[in-house]
Each structure stands twice: as structure tokens, then as C-alpha cells.
Image (cartoon, rainbow, N blue to C red):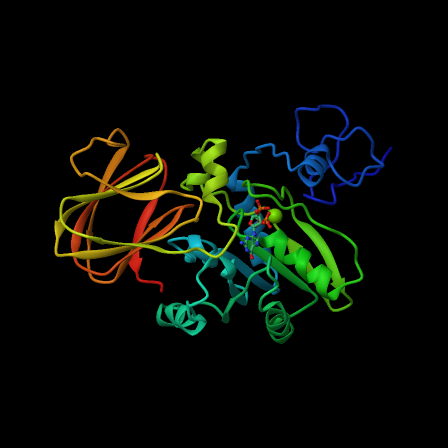
Length: 334
Ligand SMILES: Nc1nc2c(ncn2[C@@H]2O[C@H](COP(=O)(O)OP(=O)(O)OP(=O)(O)O)[C@@H](O)[C@H]2O)c(=O)[nH]1
Ligand SMILES: [Mg+2]
């Protein structure tokens, strides 16, 4: 009998029987499943829908170890509730805010870190990095060494946060191990836990990531999908706005400022998206679901998967958006 083999890119069990199922390969000599091969070589993506129950089980099992955990978060799309994962895993945990490169350079790191430290911060440490631009990776490795309790260190977080990209960067910088994990801009790229030995003292364990059904990336056509993912430093767009004025982003989002003093809305979204003011009376996008928020001073309106809008004054906004996409309000991050 052939021993089970697993894809080196996404961790799925390889099989040669059903082309429509995960892990398909034409030959067990290939290190990669067909899906990973296509992502790596042709940038071709195939959407896989994962069940979060499986991931919760993985997180619970991590919670039974005493190992250090890195919780990776996409800095542009910080989840509303960081405790969702924290509450399942009581282990020592470092919060890693990834994709610093997409925020404007003027954003001060200390300010971001103090934002988390002012919350009821349940983490050993908060660290800001960019896996793609190799920013602060040395510092992260030092902190891992300081806090690790055994060779094993788990890497968890929502799908697309950049877990596998980070592990690839650590492999490239500090290891003779030539492995390379599959990464992609679509959710659920990694399909199983994968053990990666960086050196004699450190083994990282990649995980598939929590699927966020409230993220807009699940509901975009290909055109908008390409535009939404920032590849470069965001140039924030600020609008001085008065009552009864409206702003739209492509055919994705409409915001009506229905009540309040003069305000300022700054959009932290991908440069590829067109953000513009429109005449309030027009019906553009009003077929989307409306939700109303009472803004207090200095709050961000966060749109899951899209980014956030920084506001400064009190007021009322009507937000028109796909009903499946989640939104929330927080105190200004930057
Ligand atoms: N701008 C920027 N993009 C990044 C960074 N790190 C990762 N990405 C991008 O984010 C997307 C997701 O990266 P992955 O490493 O596949 O994310 P993951 O957390 O492993 O995702 P799953 O395997 O689906 O759980 C890819 O398009 C990466 O290129 C970063 O530091 N900066
Ligand atoms: Mg991954």
C-alpha cells in the first residue's frame, strides 16, 4: 500500500482518483496537488470553501499544547473581535499585524501598538510586520525566541492574513529548507496544518485560517476582486463632507451623510478603487442593503475586506452595501 502523501504547498492529502476533489494529482511523484501547481505556475485560482468547524477543532488542539502561537492579522482588515480566536487558545500568544506596507508610511508604529495596549490586551506582545516587504521579520524572530516554550510555534489567523507568506519569508531568510508554501489572494489557500522546520530550534506550524463569510472578497466579481487588493502603499482619500452629501466606491459601497456637523471622511482602501462624491439625490446603489450608524467623535467605519473610513465628527451615516458583508465601528486606528 502507498503511504499517505500530502501536498507540500497546501497540506492536503494527495489523491489520483477524483479531479474534482481536493488534493488531486496525476502522479504521487509530484510534490504539489494540481491546484497548488496551477496557482504557483499560472496564477490560476480555484475557490475552495472550507468549513470553520474543522478549523475550530484545529485551534482547540493547539490550545491543548503549551506552545507559543502567532496570531496573524491583516492590518487593513483587523477583525472586530480578536478574542474569537484568543478565547479558544489560552497559550502564550503574539499578535502580529501584517501588511504594514499598505498603510501610508506616515502612520506611526507606536500609535498602532498603543492602540492595542490601551485595549484589554490579552497578548504577550504586539508586533507590526510586512511579510512581503521583509519588514521587522528579524525582530519578530527575536521575539519568537524569547517567548517560545518548545520548538513548535503555531501560526493562526483568518484566511488571507498572510500566514503562509510569513512562513515562506522566515524560510527564505533563516533556513536551508527549500520548501515553499502556496500563497494566493483568494481565501482558503492552505488546506491543512503543515509543519515546517526552519532550523533545529524552530518548527512553524501553518494552519488553514478561519474563513470570514462577512468579508467582501467572497462576493466580488473578478474585476472588482483585482482592484480591492492593495498592492502598494495606500494613498488615503479625504473628503470634507456636509449633511446630505454622498460618496460611492465603484458599484460596491455608498455612504450618505444624513445628519451632523461638517465632517471629514478619509478612505483607507486600495488605490485601484474609484472613490467619488455624487449628488445625494441620485439613486445610485440604493438597491443595496442599508445600515445606519450614529458616529461619535474620531471613529472608523470598517468594511470587512475593503478597508476603513476614518471620520472625525459626530453624525449619522447610511451605508449601502451587500447584505452579507459585515461592518463595524471602532475608535480611530490612526
Ligand atoms: N501587501 C502585502 N500583501 C501581503 C503580505 N503578506 C501576504 N500578503 C498577500 O496576502 C494574500 C494572502 O496571503 P497568504 O500567505 O496566502 O495568506 P494565508 O493567511 O496563508 O491564507 P490562507 O492559507 O487562505 O489561510 C496574498 O495575496 C499575499 O501576497 C504583506 O506583508 N503585504
Ligand atoms: Mg496559507
